Length: 312
Image (cartoon, rainbow, N blue to C red; front, side, top):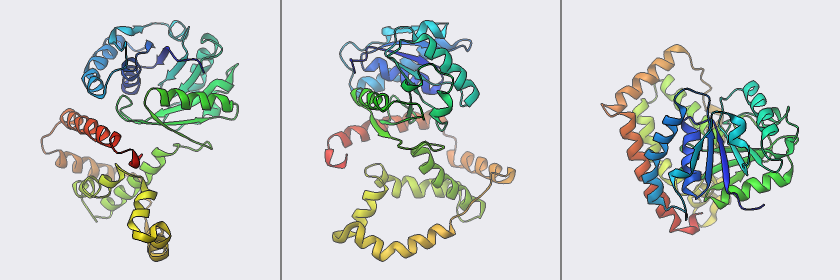
């Protein structure tokens, strides 16, 4: 595909603003739109807040916050765009109507990509005259820092559009993976959901506190997962015999653990228990303080990973 020079960001909440900052840092022109009152001011403040971290990561030639333009009308924002990154509410009816409007106003060869956390592209593209260019482009929060982007299509998406999307996200420094079949929650959110389910179950059953579960992940497997995924970590746990040795010796116990995993419901008592546990774990720290510390360490971790391509 021709080089992408102009990206339209539709919806400028937390995810959209982070995307906008990311695109600007890659030297692209960004046209943004959001119907919420005060959206432009919040967007520009968010870009300014994200910019120091993006500078630390390294800016592309010509990158500048001044290349951001805000439009009151969606049609004006997507006109002339090479790629549209949509970040609207997670409701299929709203997404379907939004894509019909974007499809009618964007250039015929523009990619229309959704940041949807779990909706099917097939539903979003249903009312489009050119559904073949509608793709999934789901980031991980915060998109201006986290490299992962999940790319996929719907029933009417052309394979060429998925390939173009993969190429685009790679070109801006992301790590795209392809969702090869539509499934609720895509890939990474389903993996997260599996862990969350057992975490809530352990709290519900009184096995561990909220703080202990966070400690177990953050100071245990989470450290390894930040470097290698679950399969390669299992492979290394097998020693010289690798994955085959591990499955031969631990396959039975792992299967028994699966059978014993919980399936909690988020009843009011469990919700209250988790909220109280989080409040106790914060111990006077603010969410903003945690976010700043997290993002600072993320920058260092990603820089270190870049120096070890064998872990890619």
